[in-house]
Length: 461
Image (tube, rainbow, N blue to C red):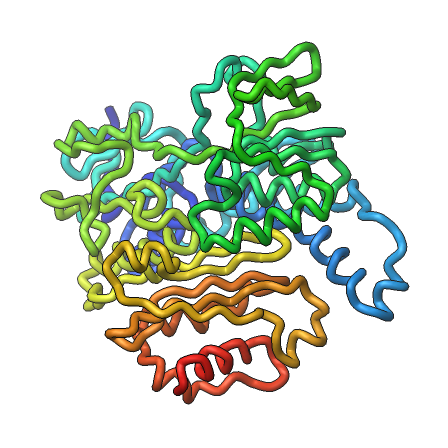
């Protein structure tokens, strides 16, 4: 085998891997990055970017129709062809119908990062094999392998050619009807997106209901909104079997109900892509996810780092990029504080449904499970002058306060366009800002950020 030496080798060119490679190269290190699929990763082609491209037109249409004077000007339906073409532009679909990562490559080239196409696997200490080539790292190897969609063991499912997030976000045509199995983020978002594009959608969730990891009111509000939009939301009986006869799909539920549609989307979770990475070659045991310390290093191996979904700490694109910054700072010997890492309780998350769901930190339930003595304050998201201008979907802002420490430990906000309201709560939680001090951060009038005033009033500060 040929052996080529670099200062650092990054396996996986998704958002986390790109950030890691870029920071190391900008610091003057020679860097190789290995990618088996496309530079940019799952997020760029099959998840965050295309899903939001499919969701946003419908959201805008609904918002416009709520505002007097604008509603009268919006008289037609969505131009489905234009929506799909715009999605294709964003994901780099060429005239041949295939997805291309050409637009991502100049960023690597400008930094002198060497790209190796193929599957990378550890082949010994500081060594990564790619085909017949071995890349030797003088300083560090960073694994950023991500996750893939899981297919649950439902009878006949694998043979029924189901959609996963990949097919759902890149489909060339909108099916007449779609069954979505799974009440998590992908299931909720894609149900809304395809309903707005004209498909008849049935969403099948477990007995736990819709978005069960969030506050209890979240699933209720999003479910009610989906139903209002025309999605048939079924909670309870699980999918027992799936079959495809010709072009149609039949999903049989455990209670005997049969559902029929043109396509079925399975959105029941994701599994780490750790198999085939050669972890056993360097003595690393894993249950799928790879355990790391606060600097994203694999314990016992000072040269090996694992970032992003693969370590299971906080499975979001923004957290992969954050972890990349921590890992590369450690590689470069930079002095970086890891006392209050933001990838645990400080990891923000947004669900881009209508209403949007913006959350950070603890829910009320898991704060109590963690042994905290908490106070919960609920206020209407649009119960202020700023809400009068948005004509938004009314939602709830829940604040979870650790009464002993006097700090905010969790926040969940639902409503139209609330994603950009989340950063203030994230700063308060990660910075452990005392609520009494936070009281002097005055929200501007008239904005919906005045929800914070309701919190302060409730606490008497």
